Length: 79
Image 1 (cartoon, rainbow, N blue to C red):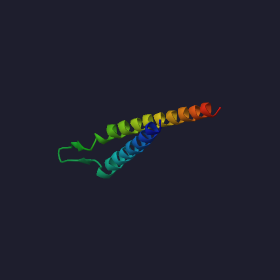
Image 2 (cartoon, helix red, strand yellow):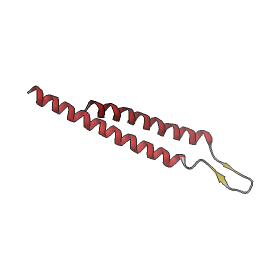
Image 3 (cartoon, helix red, strand yellow):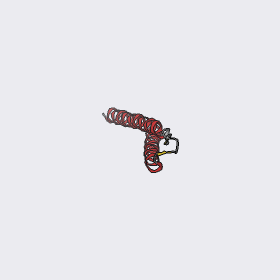
Image 4 (tube, rainbow, N blue to C red):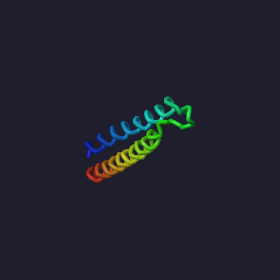
């Protein structure tokens, strides 16, 4: 159980950092319009942000559920 908690904690943190990096990169790169009027922007970073963010929420939820079950098991053992 401790391994699940440890892995889900790190995974949640890393995925959230990845989401923040995607959003920062999107805002720093910016958008530009060329001479023909075509818009150029790093649109792929927006879905990557949401993908990383949702997976970080899922990993955080797994972490919370694993911690809850671990505390329940410890209480049952001590009784």
